[in-house]
Image (cartoon, rainbow, N blue to C red; front, top):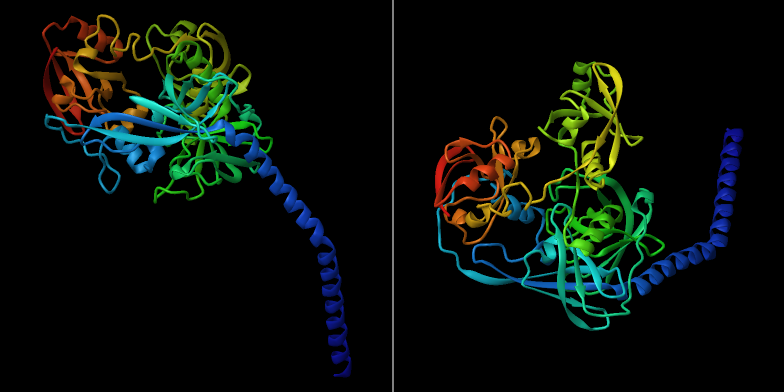
Length: 488
């Protein structure tokens, strides 16, 4: 019993000595920890002081139909509202209502939106989001020193949600662009913008993830995810690394409340560089084009195709007269490499192809019937909405009926429930147009033009050019198919 008591006393003494030593070390390290915190704080303060003068508030005004939503994302929309604006009303369960709309006389009203942007040249070029300024009647930029200037929209690119605007000024403060490809998960980042109209707001966090996609916010998604507080109004503002260089453009938030929940999304600057340069030089963006339908190789597909691994991009289809067909690509091929880079993600592959210069060469490693094959392809030019897509080009009647269309991709067919259908899908409908009067809306599938089936935008454009006084469309909206007669 005495030995047991002695043992307990010895253990207790050891614990006390250990705790005392720990306290001593902790006391000695307090000053070091405080100094480290002060140094970290001073870094953020330096970034805020040097970068804030180049971050601007961007305000826009435009006239819309009375029934339309009143704010763009920068002014306070959450993802639900944004999705509804692009793809129509949804049920509480998230399903899209596909009820044909009745023609109605629209009244007009003026709406306002507010977001952010940042200066990239001393003579006044500013990057912001496309959804902030697209279609705006007036755009106003306000600097931190109180100056307000009218801005001109140089160009917008909806597929990446990027835009360039310009103010008439010189010797402006600007931000240096970094390299988002070198950004690592866990790195510190700083967001600066004007959330809820509060100018020059600075928040800090880390890079939570890279290469985020699948949100259907834009056509080309490769988002940086961050937990730096981003709220409505931050849209278009810069995401900076610890060196104060721009690595991303804050664009959206994932939120159930409309406010920050620790998941912000930013467009990587590596994607933005190519876009904004083209917008400045020619006001539009040219993208590379192969002419294939890429599919993700899953475990089941790999097993069925006899592949050794799940890596690669399956060629689901090859468009006629496309660069892919000319190069010899075939349905069922699996692309494992492009220009010495492994291809194992459909989204990344599409983004990469789009950024290639039309006319340039790309070397592909393809698995065909179990054997590797090298194919060289000459990258084509992705048709724009005014070139050979039935979207308002010279001699085209789409501008007269007021719609823009695009090919029915596998993704769009799945999204709108047109898996077994063929045709072209309406991307946008002009306000007060003949198409709008007949109840056509984005997401409507056009199957026939004047009783002739149309399988793609080329066929649609050719059929529409033949129309004279009117055109008869067979359209599908959800489960409903109907004929629509539109006068030109």
